[in-house]
Length: 246
Image 1 (cartoon, one colour):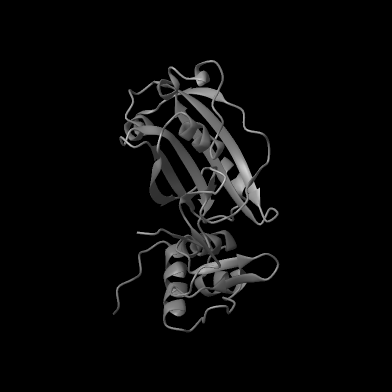
Image 2 (tube, helix red, strand yellow):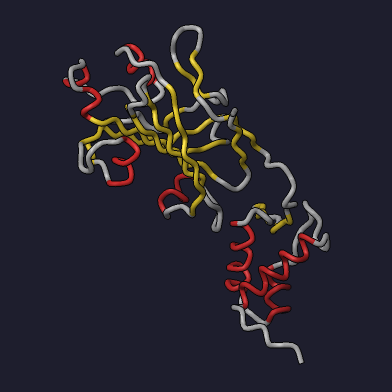
């Protein structure tokens, strides 16, 4: 007699649908069984079914379309959006993102002071607790089709002996031009990791339940490899790929 499946019901549902997607029972673009049908099949409530679908959505195997249902996605299909990463210098000496997207701030960023937590202090090579100029922005593009959260950190110590001792430096990307005007030759390093969003991040980015965010930390360095600033980007991770030149 086969062993009884002791996994939670929501995981049994997720495994059942995952196998169906991978073996072609549910081809990419085709609707999955309804929540009501799955609840009846497995003898569970609809919230339990939703929990199983959330697990599949986090792994990129399904997508929910408002008013239509939940649809299978191929694990081999390309995402709808592919964005090159990087910073380029324009002919007029300013800096722009490699993806060419023109981002608009929902509100004008205002400089605040924060103290560097250990993780950021390590990347910036400064003592933990050193004060930072910090800017936060919710940004949209095309119009409102894309959304991202963008935070800029600049250590106070980087601005010692400059005019920015008396006034805050601008947020990125204008920050790059300001640093170049101070005599720095800039290059950049990015660190990427996926994770589940905090509730306020999910709300700001309008993420469905179960969709992860891509967190990108970009460090701006000078010709001596000294870190000058750090940016944190939060991007929806459900249908996006990032391209990096090597």
